[in-house]
Amino acid sequence: MNWYSFEPADTLFFRGAEPMNIGENHTATANFPPPARTLEGALRTTILKQNEIPIDQYYANNIEKELLNMIGPADQEAGFSVTGPLFELDDIIYVPAPYSWFFDKDANEQETVNVYKSYRLNSPLVQAASKNIFWAKGEKGELETLGGKWISLPDLYSQNNIVSRKEIHDFYNVENRTGIALDSNRSVRTHHLYSFSHARLNKNVTLIFGVDKNLPISDNGVLNLGAEQRFGLYSKIPNINFNKGSSGFFMFVSQTAGTEQANESVVATGKIQYLGGWDMKKGFHKPMLGFFPPGSVFTKKLNDNFIEI
Image 1: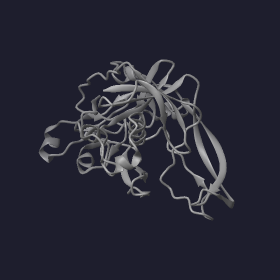
Image 2 (image 1 turned 60 degrees about the vertical axis):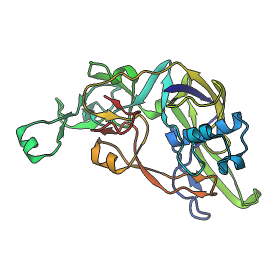
Image 3 (image 1 turned 90 degrees about the vertical axis):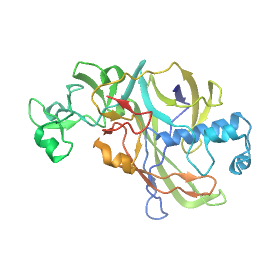
Image 4 (image 1 turned 180 degrees about the vertical axis):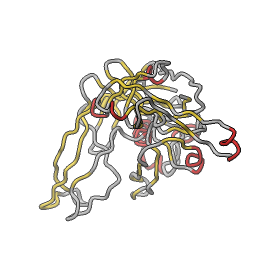
């Protein structure tokens, strides 16, 4: 795994999946941090730029075979995968908290909480029923999932069940931007404005992501990421090591596609996220797909990027 940091030059904007129809909805929702597949697309573009490959040549698959296998044809998935993005705040890496970890609901206002981890309940009755039952028990009563929060990488593997959690707004602020609308000829559309929610990283915060292949790009450079021509500087950084847990549960710190295998092995998850995107080659929308949010937990290691917690 090759790891990179990314520092945006300004704000970042990643549109949600909701449509924006003239006269109905002139406000676009934001999706932050960006999905891994958005980073994959940005890296594919960077590879083409740095290797001086014309886009029409790439669309025609008229490039070196080894390179095509690595980045994938334009109408297919990338030949590499991205892990993350994660946040780095004051030199500490933060990862999505597992949805199979819980804390006392009455501690909702506390930054440091006691965590109760789910485990597989193995009893003769369960085994006779041939079903997996998972159990988490607290000390004070009602529990709430830690999923959707962020914890430090050391806390993910700490033997101490007391962890410090971060909210997503601890890493960035939202700035509302209003702009003009354009027609198909890139001319201003009269009497139409649109509002967008941009994300600005807080002080001392950077995005971190990993790539499972040695990409043919420089160790430092410019990465165009997201809508409205947003960009920033990326830099290769030392490898980030995830320890191996022993719970028998597996988590991916990025979104997980809702495949049949994932659906059958999911243990704990949050609200399903639906993503589409824009197919540059076809000039049309990609089909909508459902994804489990980062921090979802499974009984199987669905690919090499899953970690045992």
